[in-house]
Image (cartoon, rainbow, N blue to C red; front, side):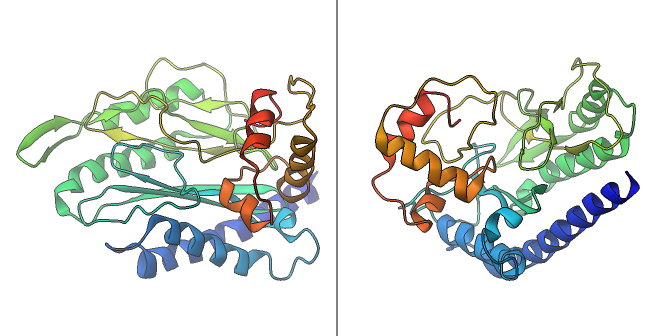
Length: 292
């Protein structure tokens, strides 16, 4: 058991060190007004591949590499946006960019994000989220109730106020976004870590891995889904599905299994793997519960 735990820790430490190096590269070289979001995504992902896949041989991306598509969520978009092919969005000085990217070694995923906002008018908003995240991390531990983590985060986050462009705001938690547990090759493993009070009384257990994610906003504190989907993942065995009858969809399912297993991916990754004319097949897999 101790040896297994040591192996897991070594995988996570390696993935975390690569994340630190790529994060430093992004901050120094990529996050600048005038950069295209799609270029930021691809250069971060290529840097991750260089560090982790180069010495892994066959099926390298499944042994070590990208944990999930690079998130480049701008301004009112809180999370889970990655550039799809053809995205021409350009980063600007007044933007608030949430950069979220992951690394993995043997399926053990490191999930880490930060906010880039060079205009000093956003400093108080960023300070609220940073302190709330730190408090949330300190609150974690074996046998800690998830609801207590959320309550601590909310108390700190919503103690902040900020002034932006002459308007005064109370910082709020985005109450329907949460952190989550992580398991090998599974980014969302079943337990959710709230960022407001009143969450589940489920406890953290020894050996579990969690991503503590906090979202502060000057808006109403609630997100809705909209726009084009950019993150996909193959559902794990046992998930309720309907039969896949389209031959091209079966072939696409096989390609996804070969390249990603249950790791998240995006349309850019399919095209990098040489897949073309896949939109109808992808829709069929989503509609039949094979892909989410």
